[in-house]
Amino acid sequence: PKSGTTSPGGACVPGPGAGRTIAKTNIVLAATATDPDGNLKGLRFRYWKLGATPPTGTLVTSLSSGKGSLTIPTTSLADKTTYSWDVRAEDTAGDVSTFFPAGTSEPCRFTIDASAPPAPDVTSDVFPEATSDGATWATVKFGGKGPITFSASGATKFSYAFGGLNLKEVTASSGAATVPALEPMHSGPNTLQVYAY
Image (cartoon, rainbow, N blue to C red):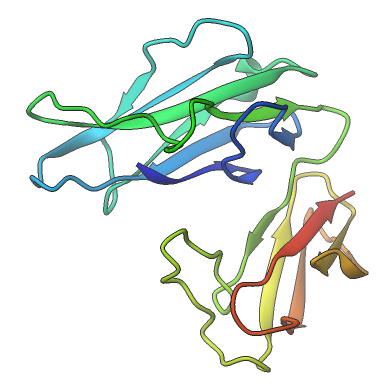
């Protein structure tokens, strides 16, 4: 599998360490897989407390273009606790992939912090999140502008900055805010940091 994410939280952060910090809310694990034989059965998601034994996990067979997700209810998560998670693909012939994330022996991690809003979700049709294959680009040329939306349950404001420079703030309404004309600093991939308060 590839493109493993938590929502809220974003792209997988492998251990060691605490990984993403996320408020106590329902968390959706997601990933995408393909099968050369065309007989992909599903994605098996596992999550467990740091230091515990990884469980068998849950096989998700309801996929959309190879993408599957698993929702962890907030009632299953403890505050101030770090969790690990990973995912593998399984096909109808019984073959399985290695666990995502690839290239490391460490699983993805996140830590629950109920005292803060969840890490914001960031969405934009003009500036989509970059993918590891480098095939995802903005829909406007460099110098163009476009809207981007931040959302996090309970947030009253957001701050954002490209590469940590020139931090700006925007007030949230019902936990969301839209910047109508975001303009990246340079061509190619840009890193946008967003914080919820």
